[in-house]
Image (cartoon, rainbow, N blue to C red):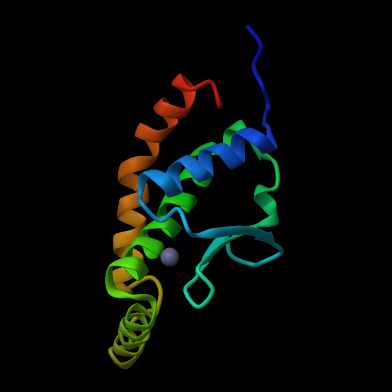
Length: 136
Ligand SMILES: [Zn+2]
């Protein structure tokens, strides 16, 4: 049996677009850029920005990659649910609230906690789906 070390660019893009469609945020744009974080959902532009470290994905990065994408998609779903301007206000309010309470603006941020939970909860289900579909 052939063990593929890398996931092809085509298959990576197919996984991302399947996820965006499934979670009904198909209008989200995706771009790769050099950045400190793994990924970022840019609420102003509706863009999922992915670190260049995910330009090619090795199999051992797959779990982290799926959690990251699903986490960012959750932010996109929130932006759709509340409207992006409103969500941006809510998010900034939450950051300020955490800072005012001597907490971390990200680690203790309820929107970050929810998004991470969502990623942790769903990644393995998607791994099985993508395996079934022959993408990984
Ligand atoms: Zn986040």
